[in-house]
Image (cartoon, rainbow, N blue to C red; front, side, top):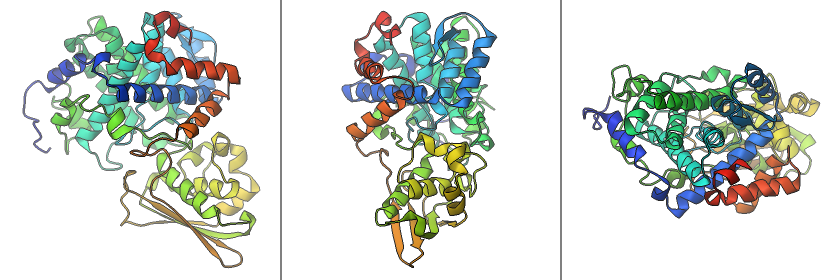
Amino acid sequence: MSKDNNTAPAQTAKFAAIVCAKDYDALDDAAIAAVKRLILDGVAVAVAGTAEDAPKIVAAHTRDTGGAAQSTIWGFGCKVPASAAAYANAVSMHVLDFEPMSSPPTHAVSPTVPVALALAEARGSSGRDVIAACAKGFEIQGRILAAAKPARGALPFHSPGVMGPMGSAVTAAHLLKLDAAQLANALGMASSRCAGLPANSGSMVKCTHCGNAAAAGLEAALLAARGFTANPAIFEAKHGYVQTFFAAHFDYNVLFDFGAPWRCVDAGMAIKFYPSKYPTHFAISAALDARKTIKDVSQIKSVRIVSPEILDANRPRPRVGLEGKFSIQFAAAAALLDGAVGIQTFTDQRRFAADMESLLGRIALEFDPSIPPDTKNMHMSVDVTLNDGSVHKGICRKPPGTWGIPVDAAQHGAKIRDCLGVRFDAATSAQVIEGFGQLEQLDAAQLAQL
């Protein structure tokens, strides 16, 4: 392990004290605006997600297990224990793969926002409490990855399964008003619940990675509040969190810079405008670029995609529509054939349509080792050859909504309304948008009405 202040004692205790010292007043206007935007995006995506099969199954199962009626499962009209609601709502938030992405990449929103809102409903917290809790939950996930800088594919588990429980624990700890010693215990418990196998990407299980992370961290904080203990030095301990997941490198100074600046502002989060694995956004954007000069897509003879080496997105013929979210080939094909990519793109009906089946057989994906594989520096190109021999080229270096590029407010607003519109009429959608837009002004009673 690199020597980045790793020999100093009591790293976990020091970090827990730093985290507990941060409250709403530590957030500047930019951070507050960013957190509110991320919360609204996550909630809207979750509302759309409730129409999918996996959340329906999870909601039915969670409802049938019973327990105290504390927090609402969104879209299903029932109340369950807060940790169960956080689990179910995080599943809904992640099932579409449409929520924002932090940098370095992980799904930091889904293990965090459902926890804050479930616990706020159960315990009676204000909008300011929720904003601060989410900011801190986002922050620890981003800080851990920034401190570790793992290479693509280096983690044994899906990233939200490693970072998510810690983010959930910090979020819940803020709302429960845990002290530093209790937070250290919560982090110790949460770290033992880290999991999530990447092999399950493309199946229903993937969305439960964020659900499990949300529930694990929340339960850890609730137990810590009751006096349950764990190794209070879980970051620096032998066989602890850092040694298990980030043995090659971990800079504690990055962790200790918690909130300076807030990572939801710098480096910010990418807003997704396509509901799929983030690298596929490069293929989609490049394909749409190439399509601009194609008059008749039925005349496509062949397609060549040049990409960095992203093995888990090389799925020439996805087995189901859901798996298409993790297929460079399918994402590009959908963009070329339909001129747009949305929630309905990744259905079995679209996957097995005759035109899709035909085009997938004419797509060649080439990996270029000279292209950086990280999402901030990579690019993809799509070359489309028509039957008349003409070649139409497209390239993407930065998909819409990516890190460091200002989000188009109109485009983001359209995404929010489209997602909310899956379940709500226009008037209800407008009320939700207005409510979360003034979240910092809401007291506990007003927040409970959202």
